Image (cartoon, rainbow, N blue to C red):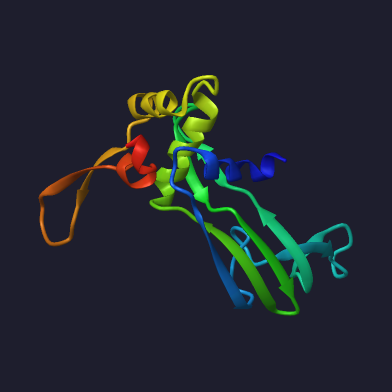
Length: 159
């Protein structure tokens, strides 16, 4: 059930994510390619080739990696559920505010703080050990603005 672990974010100090829907011709990747399956290649026995799925489900969990250390989380792709049917697709995609920072901070909160502590204590630990302070520059000016993304991704009572 680890594939749906990200659902725990709904009961965490982080703002609840939303679900965005897509209905139409197949165009949502799961995560890098359109929904597809491997079949035996009749032209090259012993080899596989990929073909588009005609009918099927895909469950894509939160995609992330660690970069320089075991706690340096990097967001890769959002979770989604996809159903394809003869060239058409219905997809439910998770949409979080400031998604890169949201998921990286939530992963740190979930994996690297003590669950026996209060939510507030765990968030304070996140802010200290996994800061989200950045200088953001706009196209129009060379001056940067200091931004703490915890202000955008946490529920008000945890800011």
